[in-house]
Length: 159
Image (cartoon, rainbow, N blue to C red; front, top):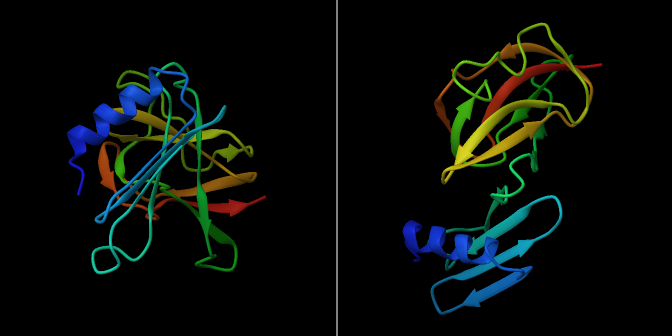
């Protein structure tokens, strides 16, 4: 399997060029990197015994730090509440910088497309946005906490 440092080097090489799509496959793995105006998607599929599905990681290009990464709402856990989940593995941040105010607080009304937090993955900060207008009911993770793919970050009430 490709090592993380080699994957980082490959991503850097791709983002430093005009290449919009890169694909590499061998007996052990398949790597696909596609770039578009909004985001890049990196997929790595290992053999069936190692992983059942490809891993998809949205990555913001260095020149486009504001590139959004979509948040995936989970099925409602209560009648009135849904969650905004992490679309990637990384570190959760409530603030754009240590001395700045949080993107959202409990009780805040969030518009569709509004940034609610950042998730850092491989030294790239990905903005996580609300997919629908909602009210933040609970922040489920602490600032600078590690998060897994699909892990709930916020409990929200759809408005």
